[in-house]
Amino acid sequence: MNPINKLYSIVLSHLGKRLCENRIPRSGEKGKAVNCFVLAIDRDRGPFQLITKISGNLLTVLEWNETSYTDEKVIELEQIDRKQLRIIHYYGLSEIRYYGLWDYLRNGATGFQYLLIIGYGTLSSVNQYFFIKKKLVTKQRMELLQYLVAHHYESGGGGLGVIELMSQLYSIRWISHPDSESQQRKVELYLASLVDSGELEKNGTSYRVKGKAISTIESFEEEERRHTDNVRLQRKAIWVSVILAVFALIQADVIKLPTVLDYSNTALTQENGELHNK
Image (cartoon, rainbow, N blue to C red; front, top):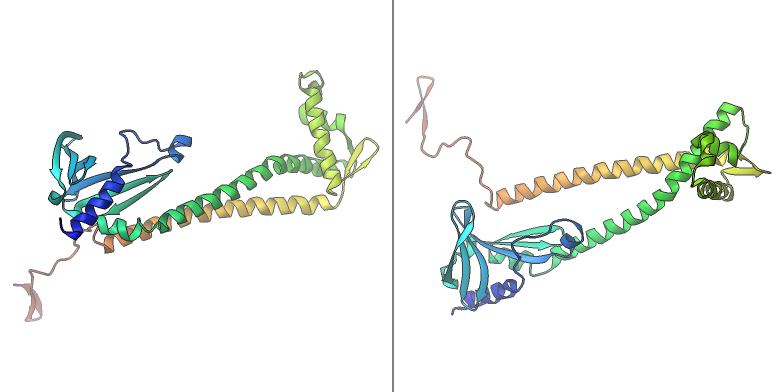
């Protein structure tokens, strides 16, 4: 076996240890745990064979019959056109495609792409975790504070007690609700939190809005706006990445575009001020 085929055999044997099963989860916790490869051989840019088992120099494949991979046969490694090998790595919820052995060795075996995926996923998860955790508490505090600020304007600066506030929020029927006591304690906790952070002041049983409430609400609304803008930017970045990837595939001749104008067999000459085809 020549050195190239030997290298080819080593790489395929390594990948063959982690061939995907027929059904590949692509969502949820099962999808995140996926780490397997699909090895396929194309012909004329269409499906041809799917490798299901690798034993040394012998490959068990299923051949494409125009609708699915069904016809099983055994072929030798030397029979494969290395340029037609398509390697798909299902890595968590990501899907990485390699076109040919050298593409995998150059871009996949180095592990750089996977570091990017892990880094991006970790950063996104951490950011999302802290944002969501913060928002679960902050949003309810802000809704309560916004209501108190609105009441402050409408009442001319008057305060509100817990019972009166609960009645305005949930109607007087909240008193007979089975969860009335736990809900009251929750609202009291939010009010105490707003007092501690300086947005409210407590006089006896009444809570009154302070000037800091306005800046707190404005900061919260600005944070909400930035989050919305970040989501939009991330979506745009994804589309830009997709477009760049498509252009890269076109330049690499993986995707072929139809020729718009082809002058290869046409010569244009000018006679008497007119163009004629030869």
